[in-house]
Amino acid sequence: MKLQLQITPIKDWFPDFAKPLLIAGPCSAESEEQMLDTAKQIAAIYPNSIFRAGIWKPRTRPNAFEGIGNIGLQWMQAVKKETGLLTATEVANAAHVEECLKHGIDILWIGARTTVNPFSVQEIADALKGVDIPIFVKNPIYPDLQLWAGALERINNSGIKKIAAIHRGFNSYDNGPFRNSPKWELAIELKAACPDLPMICDPSHIGGTPELIPYIAQKAMDMEMDGLMIETHRNPKVALSDAKQQVTPAELKSIVSDLKIRSASIESRELQTKLDELRSVIGKLDADLLELLAKRMAISTEIGEYKRDNNITILQVSHWAKLVESSLETANQLGLREDFIKGIYQLIHDESILRQTDVMNQK
Image (cartoon, rainbow, N blue to C red; front, side, top):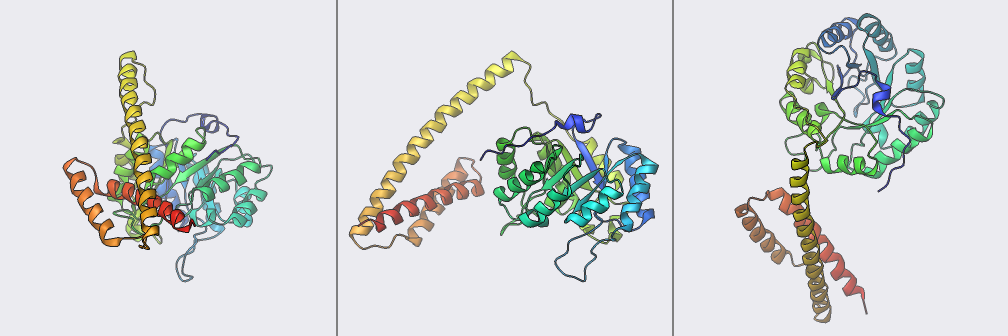
């Protein structure tokens, strides 16, 4: 996938930019006192950070807390006046955009529930024409890279050049220990499609619990992401939304202070030579893998022909189960992760079934 976006470099948005760009604040604006107290604690630790708070909260059920509404924008103004922090909030429609611009909100983001709806994204894009502020786009709830890319394109087409993606994880049938499965490979694919696109990670929504945030934040930095959005509340236990995933300002300091920011460039000629040698070996192994896969698929096609000629069904469930079980035992002995091998075998199996199906349909 190729993604052609016109992007102003992030260092030009924020003159004091340094990794990680930190966006912190409560999930929801609850009171002016809560906002100011939390913001002042964050500003005392990270004066160059961005203060975030949800003003309108999309909820599945109507009886849940759906945000404080427009008055929260006045509290955001007070935060900026008293702390000097830039402010950011989520918008889901044109009316939200207009209110935020009226109140001088510095940065807007489009949430995961909105990204899935091209009509809503286009409405927001139309409302942003002629505006020059940073717009962040969260990935859609479900792992659909085209929707994510499409939302970024719509915003960029409206004239917004200060644009970034937020990786907040995806809802999946198996999220493992996470609230939302990170599916790092999708964030990598988006970045590969548009290398100039700034990428922010949201460890709060991926993890769903403070205990996982340090691990996710470090992983994001190791993957060369530009910043972090971490939900921070002066007293998470009494938060009106997402209480389980928010951290205190003191916990935020600990998380960010412990991060190891590694260099993406290699200045040592010796290190570069060694890496080139290892990558050359990987390149040869990858070529061998492709040849083996081609041979395997040729045999799958031959099997399909045999099944067709002898009126045998394509899917042999018991054989497939035995194959996977045997392969996992071998993989374990070789030190390969079970979920990694399962994923590879599932892809190989799906391709084999498609080939055999094509054969079956041939006269």
